[in-house]
Image (tube, rainbow, N blue to C red; front, side, top):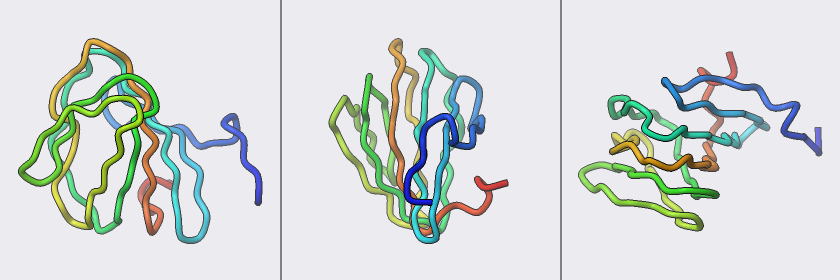
Length: 110
């Protein structure tokens, strides 16, 4: 598989009002996350995968470790393996975030 189209991505709900569309290879996973306005904030989480992302549309509050920042379109972030992270506060605007995981998150493939 060298080309994949959004309609072929696997869709998954991450939490209320937060969904993702997923595609992956052997060593990378792309997660196209849609965050609806005023979403409830899920608890921080961690995983052994390295995660990097970029805000494609809108804005999000993101906590990584002990630091929280507002990220807007074009801003990028890096979450090292096993560091607690997650959405920090709801926004009144929808957002789209592209996440990249290495290696792919096996639990997302199910």
